[in-house]
Structure formats: C-alpha cells, structure tokens
Length: 230
Length: 175
Image 1: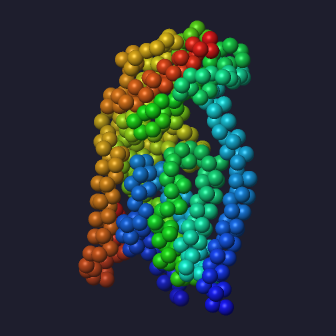
Image 2: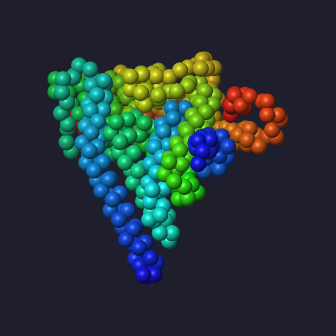
Image 3: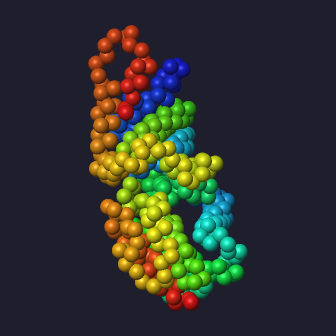
C-alpha cells in the first residue's frame, strides 16, 4: 500500500468520513457532553485512546476471532479498555471524571468504536487500523470541540471553562470570557435543543463541504479547510 | 475437526479473551485504587480546610441520623463545624458543604457536586452573591426567600436551601 493511501486512511475520519457528522455514529455522547468545549476535548481524547487500542487489538486478532462470536469478543476488548481509561481518569483527573459523568463508561456502547471494529479493523492490517483509529478519534475530538465551543460561547459566554480540570496548572477557575457578563447568555444553547440546532447546522456544513460539486482543480485545498464547520 | 472450528473454537477464543481482559483490569485496579481513594480523601479534606481555614484538624462525628446529611466534622480547635449534605435539584443530586461558626451561624457554603442546567441552575456553584447570602444566617430553619435566589433557577435555589436546612438540623442535633 502506498504512503498516499495511508495518509488518506488517517485523514478520512476528519471530514470525508467524520464519524459524527458523516457516519452519524456516537451522537448521544456528542449531544450530551458538548455543553463546554473542554468537555469535548476530554471526551474526544478518551474515545480516541479507546478507539486506537481497540482497533489495534481487534485487527491483530482478526484471524483468530471466529466469526460467530466476533461481537462479544469486540465488546469485551472495548469494555476492557474503557474500564482501564475510566480508572486512570478517576485517579489522575478526577475533575474530568466528574464532568464526563456517565458518558465515560458509556464509551463502551459508543457506536463509533464498535462500528470501526466491525467496518475497518476486522478487515484491515494493524497499521492501517491504528491510523483509522487515530483519524476517527481526531475527527470526533475536533467535532466535539467545535460544537462545545459554539454552545459554550453562546450559552454561557465563556470559552474553555473547566480546562483547569485537564491541565491543573491553569487553576480550577480558568475560563476565557468571550461575551461580557452584562449581556444575558443564550442559555437554550447549553440545553438539549441548542445541541440539536448546532448538530444539525454542523452536519449540513460537513455534507456541503464533502458533496458540493468540485469546480476546478486549481482551488487551494487550504481554502476548503478554512471554510470550516463554524 | 469441523466440530472444533464450529463449536469449540469460538468458546475457547472468547474465554481466553475474557480471561486476559479481566487480568488487565485487575492489574489496573490494583494500581489505581489507592490513588483514587487518596485523591477523594484529599479533596474532601481540602474542601473542609477551604471552608474553615483556621481549623487545625477535624474529627468526624459518628451516628448523626439526619436525612440527606452524609457526614459531620467538628474542628478540633473549636473554630467551627463542617457538614456535608445533599438535596435533589433540577438535574440530579446537589451536594453542599456547610461551615458553621462557633456562635451558631452559617459561615459559608460550598457546592461540591451538581449536575444542574449549564448557564442557569449551574450558577449555584459559581455565583458568589448567591453563596454569600447564606453567610451569617442563624442555625435555624429558613425559607428560600431569606436568601438571594438565582433568577430562572428556582428549583436549584430551593434545593440548596433544603440541603442547608438539613445541615442546620444536623448541626442542632450535634450541638
């Protein structure tokens, strides 16, 4: 396999096959944790770690695991990694554990991870599966962070509040105030309806970016990335 | 041979995977359990110290049978009492630590856990004016109208009031 296709596997998850916006997998944690940008980063990184580990293990075992019991095997492997992540997060970043709440253990049933195990890791080599896991994880993290940013700025007027939980040196009160406190925040954005609004708009944006008719080859790829999902 | 592939191999493979994963979990749990326990205790101790900075050490008061009160700690040098209590808010349980002065008034409160709506009820843990309005209240039952409730978050404000009232009951029980 050429280097080019390896790069393609890695970048696929970011936009073309973005797990949340294009494959529409794992939408429950997406809607639930993105009330703050820092939650999105934390959830995204935790899911990326699990995705990478489970993709590598499942790909390595793909010739050994019999077809009849593949789903129980995948779930056991994924659940194992999730529990390991949860114990580590609880021990070293307890504030993140509190912020993510029940959605951390629920990574087990996050469709992105089982979906990639079934669609990709069970059919491809270890290196490709690892790249796919990283790419999908980055796509998930970026999406959650952008969504969290929009919802947090509009809904609470701050940005990256709670980042102190991820990076203790920032202190627990760290937050960047974007909209002054004197302006009332648009608090529907941090509740469920706001999540659906942002999710829908971002999905439309991603669909437009990936399926719009290509004009000419001279268009700089950087420009397409600039358009972003904001 | 076909029996091996069809029936036994799936069983063996699944069992082996389960055993390996269980082993990995046991190792991680062994390594992290003491750290998690120490972190929880340290966080509680730090929260008590924050509420009563003059206290040297705390002694737990056992057998306090007041509903929604989880623990009562009295400062050894007599500068006050810290009571942890909880109440059901809009989005789940709200846990509050209440510090009392030796003269039977509320010193200050701290919201340690809450899952209220961000931007509305969640303000209970950030809004200083709301938290400060509990300070100085005498240790007897009060209503939500006695404090500076958060507009748009009546249920959350009432829940904190209920939790602090529970702490006051426990305080009166101890003293």
